[in-house]
Image (cartoon, rainbow, N blue to C red; front, side):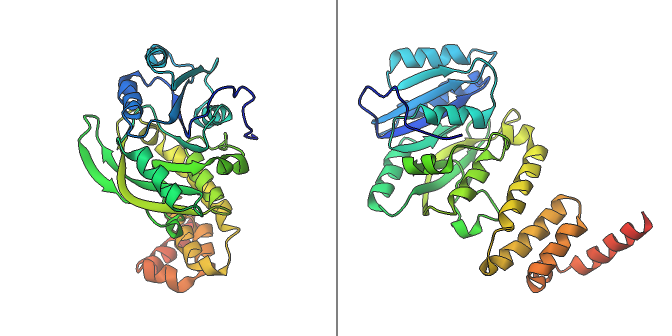
Length: 296
């Protein structure tokens, strides 16, 4: 999907656009929206898109939109899913800087201020991303997740939950892949890494909520399969400088697929020493897998 400037821009554009897809998010939605309203930085718009919810989400968004003109209320006539809803939101975006958040998570009050300042101080940076704290259902902090360097993008989603990027990133990447629901953000960051400078900021700027209704918990198996698909695609295009990463990722994916011998052999072909060093029991596992394959 091509992201273009909206034709409806006839008012002063904010500096920052935040898109919030909402689907049956009434339980935490007030807290999520309030966390944007409480931002120290005030020059923003929040595009809340109700993805055909069946709970009170639309009423909650509508109330906030009536109280603050910076909150924009859009509605999908049918449920479109997260990636498609994000794409619709960014088609409507008027800001020069973009971000998005979930209907169950919380921005710390200084998040936008900090990330805008980082982009202003680093004109060469296209995207900045920060650390976040994982919280439980009652907002107890469980742990802090520091932003890893982009070199570790093969082993985790590097950008995480708190980020801000320039509009030209949105325009160049052409939207989130609507076929990768659950891994759309990881795919987006990996594609962005091909052409943009992405800078970590080691500050705790966001609260990421884990609960039994979160997408991460509900669709963990499907998400893992989609992440594998994205990683395998990306690894086909890496150069010799990243053979060590290629070997380790193929080894990890082999375990994800219950010791997939095909993926393991790819890992060994990339860098056997790295694989054996990382997995001392690998030789025994490999022999056991070969014997099992022969017997089956």
